[in-house]
Length: 436
Image (cartoon, rainbow, N blue to C red):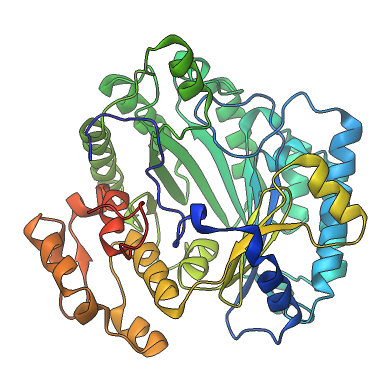
């Protein structure tokens, strides 16, 4: 793997990779929806695809300059899709263990639109919060600072959001502008004051190391400002350049690549940041996340999903996982809306993995935590990962990426900081995306 940040995917979000998913699997997805439910926890993901601006590094399905009528139409379609999905046998009557409002920018919606959407979700799923005698243990809501107001923040609390994640990324206005972010640093502090005053059970701040224009000095300032916020958790991603981004498109047009820090530099910056947060009492929760109090601060969406939980996905281009079957919704606006408004599930493609592929998925996602419970996986799948992938574990140890193999693998800090580059070692070599 090149040390420079080249165009292409780095972050491992799933296994088998999305390139394996096809429309031929749609019948299998629909069959899973109508089959008996699995015994896994059930969560809900809602994709809100609107943004004030498209970040130059963003590869998600998002829309800018959308009319108010289209935003309203989409928010109503989400509630309608929830109603359609909740009527299926694999979903009906099951409690939601976790809910995640992602994007895009969920906080782009107005308070009235969000309130109507949440009412619709309650009607479809009987969703209740942890303070209502059960139900969803966590309801995460992503925010962009410039889309918040004090009344909207208070409304999010009253709607039952338990975990607010603020997309800060950086505190340097020149860096924010160079990377296409819609907000500036003054909006970060103002919105954070509202969030803290509202008293959410859990708060998170997102940062990105190695953005265009970043220097070690500017990174140090961003980390210092983030420490002052005293959020319950901090998520730090390392800047990458997926193909369908403005940065990569511009590079193809001009022949000049975006000046993103190389991987070694980014890892050194994140390592430095980890040390600063550890000094303040935080603990490392994954290759990207630190938490202030591990006994009270949890990330149910991440932990359940990485351990094989079901995830019902709502919204255009959203990704779901039900009864061991992967699927993605229609990836274009009209296709999605027309299906939902006609009363149909908007599934576009999917994949029914083998049991071995589901095991590999839980290995590679679980390793992102830095510690892998191989005993749980052996009980679940009937295969001992320590034996089946003995050569891979030995190789990681030789490369200085493992502290121990037995009784369960534990990554070193070096391994944790480069974890996504290590995961393809566990992929089956049948496909071209398996890195040798």
